[in-house]
Length: 304
Image (tube, rainbow, N blue to C red):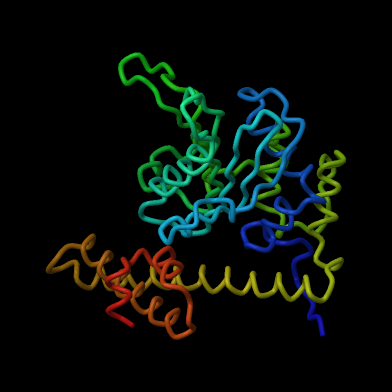
C-alpha cells in the first residue's frame, strides 16, 4: 500500500529522482535543455544526445569504480559526464579528473593511422555541498575549469572542461530569476519544496519536468524505489549532520587542551567510524563506505 508523501514532487538530489528526471530515454529532452543552457556559450546548440552505458568502460577491478550517474554523447562525438554529489568527499576533484580519463581513452584507435585527435569531454558536477576552499566566495556557485596558462590566464587546451555547480550557494529567490539557466538551478534546488508549478515555468520543457516529477503519478513499483532512495538520502544527511554536531561538541570540550580545530576533526572522525560500522553491518560495499565516510580501505578492513 502506498503511503502519502508530504512533498508533491521528487527530490532531485536522490538517486532515483535524479535518474528519473535526467537519465531515462523518454525524458532525454530535459537533460538536453539543461545542457544547452549550461553550455550554450561553449557549444552553441546540442541537437541530439545518446545515453552511453557504463558497461562500455574498461572492466578491470580498479575501473569498475568509475560508474557515472549519467554518461552521454552528442552528434559530434563529444562526451558528457553528469555527476550528482550529495555529500562532501575529500578527493572529489581528483575523482572527476579520473572520470574524465575514460572518455579520453575510449577515443583511442588501434593501429598506426590514429593522429591522437580527441573530441571534447565535459565533466559536470552538481554538488549539494560547498568546497572548503570556496567558502570565501559566497556568491560564486559556478566554476568552469580548463587547462590554462598560469601567466597569461589564456586557455591552453579547450577540449577538457570541468564544471562544478555548488548548489547551496544558489540562493536566488523566485522573483530574482533572470535566465532560463537560473530557472534550471532553481528547480533542481527547490523542486521537492514546491506545491505547484511556478507561474513563469510554463515552457514546455518545465511542464514536462513537473509532470515527470509528480509523486502521485508514480506506479507502486516506482513509488517504492523512490521511497527507498529518499530514505537513504535522509539517513545519509542525518548521519552527517549528527557527525558534524557531535564533532563540534567534542571539539569544544577538547579545545582547552588541544585546540578546537583538532577536537572537531577528531570528533567527526569517530562519528565516521561509527557510520562505517553501521554500513558494514548492513552489508554495504567497501567502496561505497569509503566514498561516504572518507575512511580509507585499510581502516574499513580493520573494522571488518
